Image (cartoon, rainbow, N blue to C red):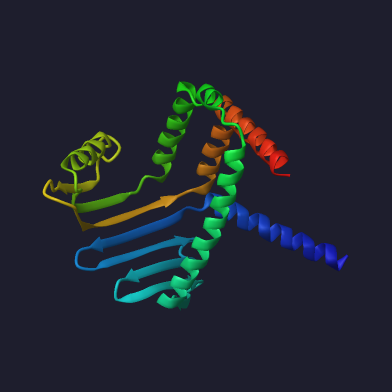
Length: 234
């Protein structure tokens, strides 16, 4: 009886936590600059600042993580040697995974006709509509960007400028100043962003996207390819 009571309270606690996670907004902020040195700071807060996580990175110092739970602060510092060791391990594991994937994919028959049939105009329309809804819900309350950029090829610099100009309707109301340089490669500036995310809205958009006909067809095709891959490898 006592065990059932404990399990009941545990399940009730987990359900409450899940509902809070889905419905209580997660506030985020980030800022960074790149001039002579690179500086970056980001953080999230949730449950009316009951949980706060901040990450700071400076070229002169190792990354620092600051956690505050119910007002109690905790801090962690990542040593550069540890960071390099972790990166090496990740690179090795990713390389092995990539090699195994390439081997299995090379043995399978490619079906570009099937992909062209699945990835059509209807697919792009559904994905674009979902991305627009996603942007509407996660778009930042404040966004400030001031950057001076340039690529080795002036044509590439012009293409980047044209791309950001095409995003003007989505970025309306934000302070964005992009100064192109056609004399060589350069990237310096600063940026700040602040906003909030409600997870339940993102989950609803994702579920609706996955249940749409074009995406369901793609998922079925990928599952079929995965089964064929397992049969071939075995």
